[in-house]
Image (cartoon, rainbow, N blue to C red):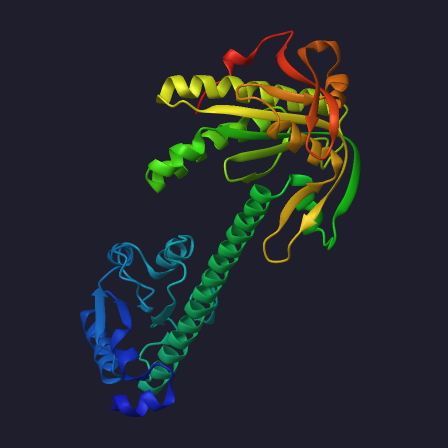
Length: 386
């Protein structure tokens, strides 16, 4: 019975191109039967057909990675028989997805049941009916194609899920790079407005003296690289001391402790960071041949902290504590840490300070201020450069 390619292409989902792409493996110890099956397959429009005369040879062909669409298998063969072939194939994760139709002269129902139980897709008796062969072949191939499609879709979904997880992790990491961890967690939990007053905080400002003339004459990439190197070290010092970097403004670095989480030793943490920064700039100049100086101002007191912005979030702080810290910096001296009376009182006897006396500070009038000199337990020379 001769069935044209176009006639079957209308019946199935494969189409003429799909027929030619299908790969078959015919395993039978009878050369005549192999030729007969191969002939029928070619009449149906299939072109890629390999043959093996025993189960072991069939296993070798399957393991070449050719990705067969269907195996037509005889049961009774010398050496490895069909039952043994099925058990090996269906126990191998790399081969078990290849469908197998058993074509056997055995008329025992138990043989057919055993084959299906062992993983065969279908069972045909010899001599086979060409129409029945055609129906079983195309039914099996279409089911394999559907399984392959499902498997591919599942893999694509898993890949997409993995990418979404990666993107989520990346977004969360970016949020943590911009905001304090406690604030980022509150935003993730759905809080829309974050604003609170902290009664006990210490705020610090630094300004790089001599950086503006350097930036005026240096290449842009050198300016950014230099500033990034300095502020990256400041970030490490802040993190090591449990201090929050608030933001940078030009060559000014703003940091604070006691926000967003209240802590008792806020002044000590900020003072330690300031002393490290001062020591760092000296060693930085020695290493890179620069002549930068740093002016630092500290103040302690209550402030308001919160999130501003919709598209670009920013955690910021406001209040007299912040304004006075800024004045301490701007009215200070290069190479010195200028602190308010409030910060001096909060530091206690653990730090050596020098009274500057009463000075006029813009917006504040005459106030007593100090220079922070050192901590009574020196440790700063051990802080590494990066």
